[in-house]
Image 1 (spheres, rainbow, N blue to C red):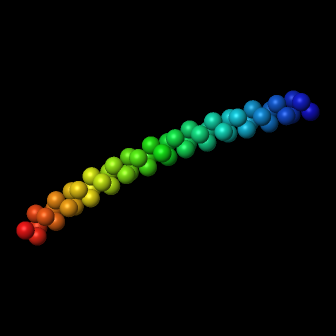
Image 2: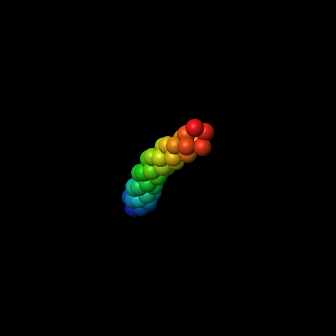
Image 3: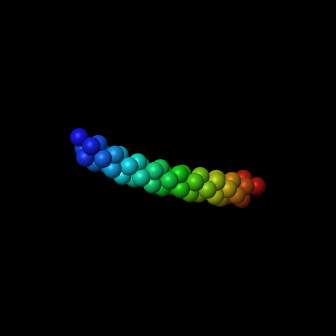
Length: 53
């Protein structure tokens, strides 16, 4: 019984580490996307200014 509990704890710990790493990757991706969005909006604004002067 104790071995079974130990194995389950190891599996849970492993899954937790995987999920934590995936969450960190998602945070980095969202940060990158947010910056790219701002850059793209800036470019669109400049293009509109050039077109509608």
